[in-house]
Length: 468
Image 1: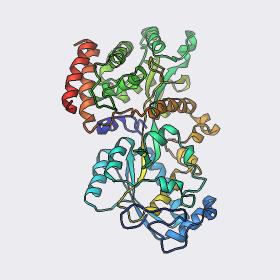
Image 2 (image 1 turned 180 degrees about the horizontal axis):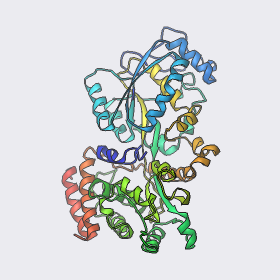
Image 3 (image 1 turned 60 degrees about the vertical axis):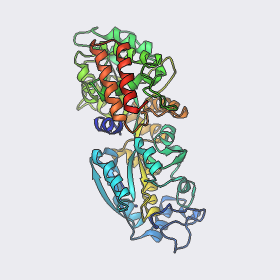
Image 4 (image 1 turned 120 degrees about the vertical axis):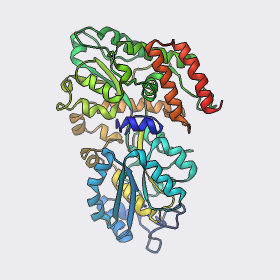
């Protein structure tokens, strides 16, 4: 995705990035084994056997919810566009009318929260950034979904919840151990490299951070106008984001996510910062001005041998109409560091508003749009994959050779999830933290100060920000 990475990191970082209603009185829908919920309670229970196929499910939904209307609050995004293309078929199948409200993601969160705090209950289905999920879950903005997922009548086997990539299923959609969203689009980060250059000089893609740095040095200046690597590094949030791309592989972090202590002077964090600074000495001279867009351009125009950024950008790298290296590219996961494997994680979810008066109809929309049954239609319509089966689909892999490596990188991202670490530190003042960390990372890159000095200054400023 980059799911419009500039806004992603400004709103609460990232990448890579990368809206909403079914029935009741605004309270949590009670979904028992009989399939009854807040809408359709005056009708016979939905029987699991009667929803075994998509067609049978659609008939059952139409009998139950025909004429219901649901309102959506979604961000402008490729996934939204794909879901909109699928809407007419959903409406015909279920009889549920869908009303879309699509806006720039910079406005989306405020609109959703205002609807919640004002108790307006305008929306039924919300498009929710994974970085908002802890806040939305804690404030009860969105409905817990475990009962819906477990109800075989409301969620037939062809939905296949377990097919969703574990990193997304467990890393962007849960709060306090409960599911509050269904992942719809996501991204991690990985390496793209020039296969022609690697073959020419007898090199293999990097598996470790040491190899990554060594290759960047080797290719830097190897040919006229060629640099070793391209990454985002613009002063401020983008530099902090670039550092985070490698930081967890060294065991570093901005904040200890268990204690809340600031860890900018931790030896592992400093080691990661020094690596990032050293790596970018082998990037184009103007790398300090690069967002993800400039970093991508440098690679697709043939100026860099390697690139490390968001998987959502792979389609642009492989598009011959905009990439001069489309037929010369290979991919590799983020290299393993001294602390092991790790990779970025960001993404979007569909959630049910806790104020929805149409919760089960809203869930029917979520089930249809995000099911394994419809996943290929969604991706071929421009959606961003989140399912293991899609990443392994032979026809789709033939069109996008990065799919197997994306899946491998997502497995690496799940390493952090299993350790209970959020790739983007959960903190209400995250934007300030990233801005100041990125400022000092940039200062170390430019030589204004050493990495040790930058770490010390960042430590003090972040402590002031978080009140530690």
